[in-house]
Length: 118
Ligand SMILES: [Zn+2]
Image: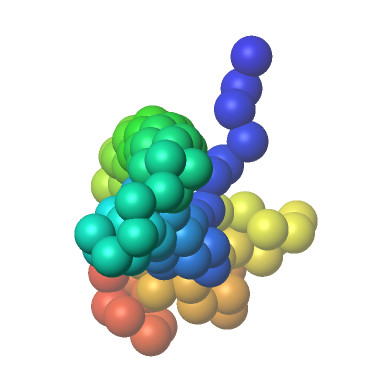
């Protein structure tokens, strides 16, 4: 089974912020308030939020680990296909280095970046 490519760039910061708020900020405020008026519910709530925030951050760390592994695989693929012309339409090729799409089948060099094809 192939896992869909994970890309957390747009939500990663929000998830970390939410996790830290739930795990540290809100429990910290609750425990601080608890020093003025002793309230058992505040302590219980602080513990529950700490666990939920911890799980959220832990889950995100796993997701991030998978994402970095995927990025590493993609990087290896492109490193291996660096000096290659990639066929996009019949007789039309794209440069594997700079993405120039004006490459003919018999081109030995890229007219834009100058790389030599294997
Ligand atoms: Zn090129």
